[in-house]
Length: 242
Image 1 (spheres, rainbow, N blue to C red):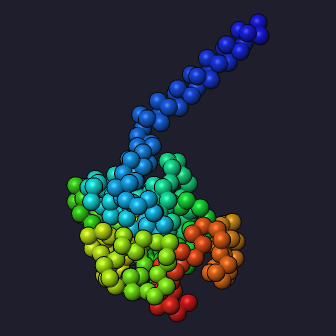
Image 2: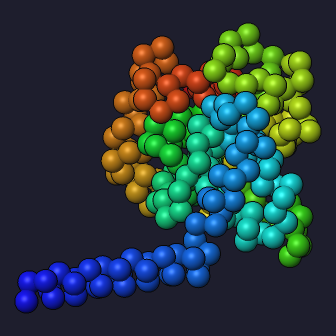
Image 3: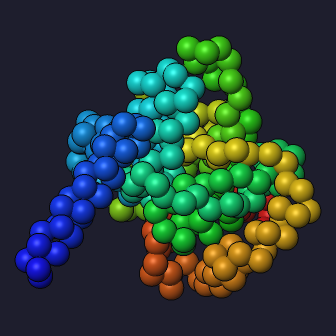
């Protein structure tokens, strides 16, 4: 009787796992992550993905002209760290200042870890741009930072040749908007409502952890990218006098 029960439970487990795999494959989930994983070495020839979200964005922009694919692929890497993000990851609802106007833009950001959320909210900006797809022209909310190439303290752990030709951005390797570096996109973006900002302030990560991280001196940061992305992007902070 016990053996029959074990056999039945084993069959039930196999059936359950098989259906998960079939469902996973049939609805297309996972293919975006697998595709980017396969292209990893062509995107990062030396294997260094530190703060290299712009390289993912460029790769996706050049190879995927369907608007739906463009959106989905841009959910599978962290624009701050350059780390791949698995399927089914829960995005973080954030607010980031719009370039030039400084109005608050709210949207969803796909991250590898919570410190990247905090760094993005403090040091990046958002710019609405138009891109051409198979379906026609579409608006995209691009995450941008100032050109980092002339910085004396350009972070040593980032491959500068991925982004720069001398003190200028390398347009063959990255995409830009108005002379600024595009590092990724903000999903389902819109101008923030007061209720959106209250929601963000009440969240454990954006409301509790981020203020602590943002007050920490950069040489004392140990989690996430540490000070790597901050050194890459902090000209934006100076420009906006924060």
